[in-house]
Image: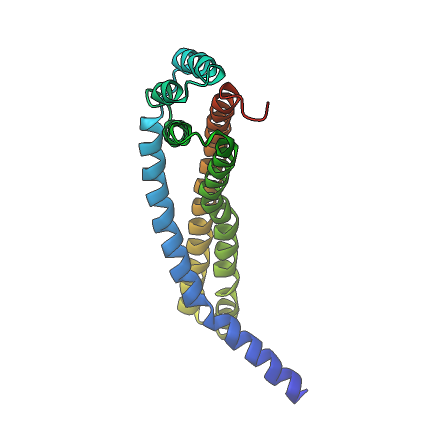
Length: 207
């Protein structure tokens, strides 16, 4: 019985010691979520997609590549003014065309797909981890709260319940931000990737 009591005491102490790291991580997560909201708004304001321009440049690139006029095709790609990732890809692809390295453009498009995935990972991880931290921050203070209740210490009970409720709210807030940003950005990047695939097809990659 004494061994069991010591083991439970060690587990309780270890769990209680995790409260401050969890609270600190939650505060950092909230700061990160606020920063991501600002970054999201900035990215939204800069998004620009002109389908007619994209189609026109795609056809021009296709004709130039068929005629082996790679410098002309590159000059058309450099004129693209679309969403940031699409424009960046077009400029990088233009450099490959100038160097007559057309076979590496397919690899370049895959690199951009990986880059988009990485940008989604941050908010996706936050949408999963933040509620877990909130749950940990909820459960850890319940032990001291129950002890305070058993001892009739209402102040201890109230303080620990306040911590539990606050960490729950913070964790859910950060999780909601991460989830919403992940969904919206996923749609954005699917669209960007479709535009990049169109440019790749215009250059005759894989034919």
